[in-house]
Amino acid sequence: MKKRNLNAIYTTPLPVEVVPLPPLVPHNPLSVAYYVYQLFTAYLELYTDSVSSYVSRIAVDSYEDMQGLWKAGFFGKGTQSRSDPTWELRTAKRLQEASGEVEGGAPEEVTARRRAARKKFKNARALAEQGIVANNTAMEKVETSEESRRQAPSRREDTQLRDSEGKVRRLEKLQLTFQEAFFLAYALDIIDIYDDRTGDLVAVPYLLGLLMPDWSPDNSFIINYVAYHHYRSHGWCIRNGVKFGVDYLLYRRGPPFSHAEFGVIVVPLYSDESKNQLTRKDWSWSSGVNRVVGGVKKVLVLCYVEVPDCTDKWHTVEELLKKYKVRELVLRRWIPSRNRD
Image 1 (cartoon, rainbow, N blue to C red):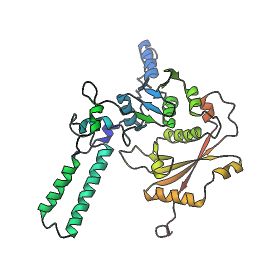
Image 2 (cartoon, rainbow, N blue to C red):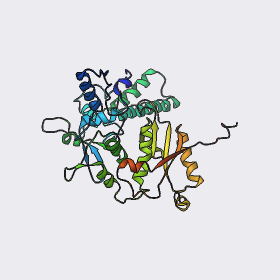
Image 3 (spheres, one colour):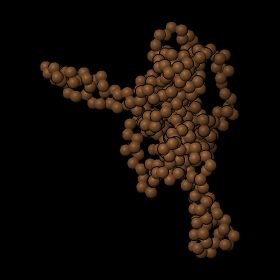
Image 4 (cartoon, helix red, strand yellow):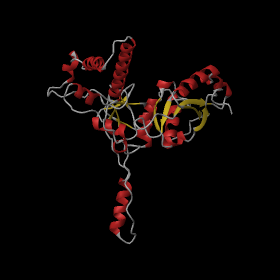
């Protein structure tokens, strides 16, 4: 299988396009006009009117926007996929409506091939231990049986996956976390979020109120968003880390390029020590999480977000975020057999 050119597929770290400014000639009016035009159009909005807001989730409907947000920053998760939205292509391929693979193999296909190869190896090893496999003919029989099992029969629900024209229905959406949606709407200003019930455009201050119905300085959304905004502004690709018992996973470029280097746990830090006692974890918790993170070759980072005493005096989101500060603590396991110095 030919290896994918990841740099050609994932060209930009964020879903924005920056145009270099042309040289400015002050005594030429056309040069000044063209410079001003490029200055105000260099920051393009690529995804507008494409996100629908629900009571408990925010999802992108357009397939082109789903691919754009995933390939430029790895935002969101396909509702019918493990990560990138490939359900439609995988279903079309399974129904023999598309040829080839999904850009070298979707995560689901890679996992299926890996599991099939592992199962074939175990079956061949079991037969070899029993003395049944004596030549290559028996090995070929095992491989043939595995290939026949891999050809899945048609399903009863396959008829419901096609529209009136016989094409595969677009049932998958790109689901964004609240932190991702707010970052795209506020920090990058490249999406417009609409209320699915009324169809009205949701402004950023009103969106903040929807995401924090019970307003408080230590609201879980604003605490996690401060950490999310902090790492995104430093160039890290952030993904959900619930699989490894952490809040976020930090990638240098993205999941297709390498594994995550850090696992981040967001912890609110109060000026009142009595409140810190309520959120403080014991040594067994930190040891367990650090063991899980260290077992998958990642480094645990405790991200402390300082909660301000009062956030009543703010008029813009920028003024609100300036009241929060971030501290980081790297926590590593000390293994006597490895760390003797």
